[in-house]
Image (cartoon, rainbow, N blue to C red; front, top):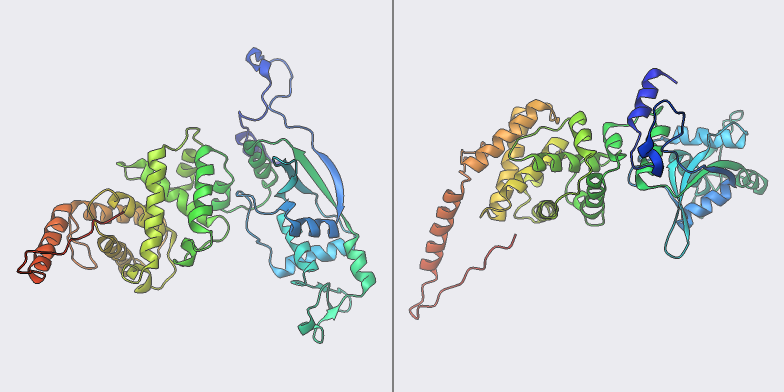
Length: 413
């Protein structure tokens, strides 16, 4: 292991991991193992047992810190070849959790790509290519494909189903320790910046994971109304950057990986009022994007929403949340911001220069300078005056000799 690896491991030490009660007598000259986990144990499962546990929900392949499926078909087929030919396959690492009824769930800390490959082979989603004949064989063939696919014979299926995979299991891990194990075993794997961020264990990270599940990746969430990159932790990263900028106000921060990681490791709980404000922002973004009258930022500009756009859409709505803006005003601002970036920039990336440009736009909105897309002045005074004129015009149009007039309902945020 390199010196850099040791430095990385040192950075992963967590004060919350099983510290001995008598550590107040700490003596640096005394050898003692501190902050250790419970001893894991190893056992072997057949591929058939692992496949069944995945489909029964006993194995959880998708804890919040886990990567997406990143192996392509060729690499997935290679691991099937290794299993069939008895080549070494690294152990899968689980942490075993028990629910209130004592039912166990094996959470996959390491080995998701291997287990996914096994599951897909059993289910007929990938095949096995004989290295000598180059013939492609399938464990499962649907009736519609039996004429065009070579289904493995029963003895071949049994051979694969009976192969053993070594699994290492931890018990009684805290969430912090679980993520720590994940980070340590991934030291030799090229995680993306987003995946590294998602692997952090802290109150703020846990809250953001909840937001991602509730507002982004859920059924009928933001991914259903806005096109943006959702692979390899990008959802979590976008939300983290958005919240980092909002939390920093009135300072106008531009997120970087180093700054975000330091901010994410904080131990305090997100204030309830701030949590509610972010909930409102994400709900409002979904509402604007899902309505025909307010989705011009996504319909008139059809390109996939870039991370920098997603982040500062959220910041813009956060800044506008408490003021007397209408949804039409907010929608016009989102469109104006996106139009300005797309007209003036070739490379739409979240960097310091574009971050500052977005803050300049937000300052214009908050301060009343005209935007580039419409030339509209978005100040509270101007909007109030504009709405008053509209109300006066409506009142004139709706004048009745009896003195009756239509009542305008108050806008609900």
